[in-house]
Length: 521
Image (tube, rainbow, N blue to C red; front, side, top):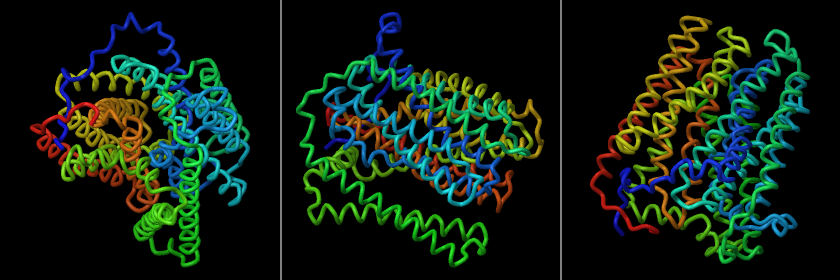
């Protein structure tokens, strides 16, 4: 089978004129759904990091909580089930997409309220409960993303996808402002500070965030169900068995991860020092992942689910990608996808803690990072999108990697300069402009790789792979800072981008002359 060349701008569908679609109901609907998708992310990422830090949780434990966002990296595992399996009671009334969307959004609200009713400073049991609710929030939020992606693809033709994606991203950024700047402002206004922790302030702020999810829920109730051929649906019994395989694989992951952690605690691994402990924690994660995938394969082998259904659900999208590009180029492309965002994600896990350690207040952080930074990142996204059409996908991708790596060095200067507000804004502007540019180029890159037959599944795989390694490594950023200090850590995150530059340049040369596969392959 011929390999696929990345499409040029001329190969891509032209978007419809803005005046024809700006008043279309789908545009505000995607803004609202984007808002509900963007809201949960910072509640288990930077905002939660600040809450835990104020509650007196040690720094390396704080960054471990970023693992709750790993659900975004593994959503491809259950995405095919969400895509096809009906929900009893809801699917008949709402349709398949809206039923799953409403269920996921209600799960998001329940998880946020669970976090709001848990004080992480109350002891180990409360901290474990907070971790469980954070993991639930990550799972439900990732599920919501899967459904929204599928809904967006099904309600509009290809020429409208650009407009709807832009509307979705705008709403997503607004949701991040509420979960970031909004929650920080409220927690500070209601009396919680680094010197004087107030659980009630954080609980009320998270309660307001849960209330804001009403925007997405109301939209789900009002929008129509996409017209999807019934032939796409598969027997519920078969998918129920696949769901059982998935659930037992999750149990295996949790069991091995918890057991390994308990064993490491008994052996006193932390006494070995930050770097050996970091390596052993990585081994712990690898063992848990191996147990999950091994359990799933074993259950399919013994007949809990049919091999044909498992292959069609989980194997065929991957096989088609490798068949299209060839093993060498496909492996190279997956390496680019898996490593491209590593510099900014690893730094981003601990950035809010860094700002606070440096002496900035929550209002300072909320204004500079969560409001000003979001606006700059939107500008960077527009810049990246425009240049991607003029320079081409791969050249824009390379420049995005350069900017992401170089702007991390600005944090070194900020760490040495101390709490200087103008320096903070300069660093935040550079970082977010680079992040917006790189994100726009990267989305164009991922879209160019997706095959028509497996759009939803392959996009879920690519977006999951994009965050898997960076977020796993980001969970150890607190330990790395303890071992290296902030300036050396920021230099390390910048150096992590160097292999990405090599991979992107290599991929560009390999793919430049490859013939393009026919549509639908």
